[in-house]
Image 1 (cartoon, each protein chain N blue to C red):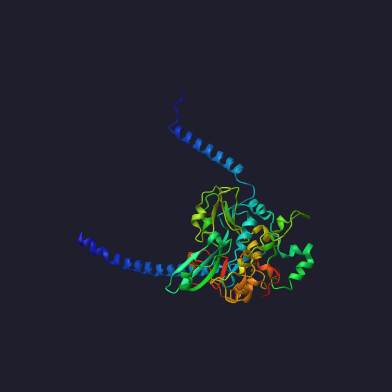
Image 2: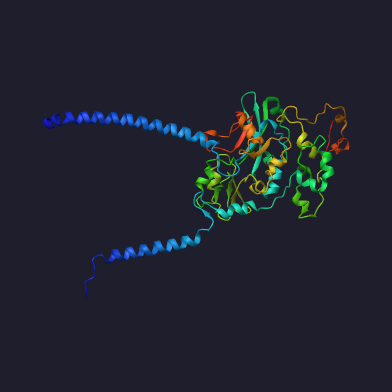
Length: 262
Length: 158
């Protein structure tokens, strides 16, 4: 046994060494290609992956301009027959206190406006602001991935929509959305969400919430038009998205978003 | 009598599979909508149906077709950037086709209508005009008195 081993181990160990070397170098190369590929792919697919369609819509929310009047929420509810208690878009109020606490409220989604905060909280408050929220119309929508019947889809122009004829109301998408933008519409027993007012945009109008906004906190436009307001703002490069670590690639961009917002 | 083949059970199984596969393909043919998009995986007609939904809000430009003079006048005032429908209600409940079906009056003329935007809140952007008790005339407001007693809705300069 011993003899056989020592005799045959000489060429074997050589080839084994070569083999191990190749494994290590090959593995390292593959890892490098893989990671650079993932990073590069992620960055390009995030927003500037140009669509081949005529338009490339984008939505901008300027937190510094929102006054929290809730007219956007009301306009959305009227325009899209949103049932009571459900919201396609809503406004949250954040109050950040001196001791680092963050208090968030959104009574009726902000549809009736906001009452002043209590005296106690007002005394502690360091900063306070309103944050409108809605479906982010992601580039890689998790809700579309989980739909078992192909009822929710991303249209070629970038709208994430629900086909109510095919939806079975299983609510997988409601759980999958990291932004809480989806809900089950209990009147029709189907999943429902913001459609960026697809029907209005197709008829040359802006979404109802954008139309209702008196201060320009909500903006909607075409990234293919370099003169449009959204193109100009995004060119400046001072924007962020909600939960970028989710790698969903939102098409709703926030300006002036404080770090407390999730 | 011929002896049955040793593979008869396999032939039967094969035939059964064939029948099931053919049945599946036929059912699939009928069950899949003709507009199904295999690339994006959705029913193409759903998108065209979505685009055909009626609009309720017409935007400020839609008001101009009948109320050109009012729109022109408001354009010079303080509230020129506001959506008419925000206070007056949506176009869809005011006009159907070319016919006026209801008045577009501001249904709620209470203080809430103004305070909805102008109530003093710590979360509002700095510089946004907010109701304050520091104004001399505001100190003497009585219960039930509306802002419109002194302010003009389209041009509420202090």
